[in-house]
Each structure stands twice: as structure tokens, then as C-alpha cells.
Amino acid sequence: MTEVKRKDQWTTEDDHKLATTVLEIVKNGGTQIHAFEVAAEKLSRTKQACGFRWNKTLRHTYGQDLNHAKQKYQHPMHTHLKQAMSSYDELLEAHNRLQKEHAQLKTFVQQIQRVCSESPLLHQKN
Image (cartoon, rainbow, N blue to C red):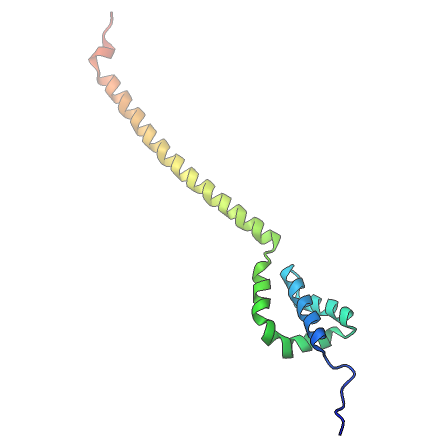
């Protein structure tokens, strides 16, 4: 008996196109849903079919790649916020250091003023 194949059966090439589309879009900050929409156009399938195929079959194979793609993308706002917080921390450290130095200098000036006021040489009139 001859094996009957479905007309819409997924091929290895279809799986590869779906996987590369999903990984590329996620790596660039897109969502999996958007990736399924893009893949659906490329493969002449529905986004639901692409999502089902990904979740049922391909996610197990490409799960680690997907996690890597998600980690690789950092939203520009996240990067900006991280940089701003780093700058804030550096400014706070500098501020605290300057406050400490100011207190030390103030104490030093008070000591000099006390020594000067107690010195008989400075109070002599010519």
C-alpha cells in the first residue's frame, strides 16, 4: 500500500525557515508572535500553524538558541538606564569622597587657626 502524504506536511526546509525566522526576530528584539506572522508569509501558512509547529516540535530543538537570542538583545532603554545608574553610582561615590575631604580640610583649617591665634610671634607688634 502506498503511503499517503499530506499536502501541507512540514519539510525540513520549512522547519529551518521557521526556526531561523523566529531566532532572528527575537534576537533583534521582536516577539515570537511577530516571528510567527513573518514566517507565515514566507511559508504560505497561518501564523497559528507556525506557532503550533514551533511550540510542538521545534522549541525542543532550538530552545537553547532561543534563550541565547533573548539574552543577546537588550532593549536600548534598558542599556540607557544601566548606563545612567552606573553614572549615578560614580557621582554618588565622588560626592561622598569630596564630603569626607571637605570635612578633613575644615578640621585642618581650624587647627591652623587655633595654632595661629595661640602663637605669641603672630601677636607681636613691631
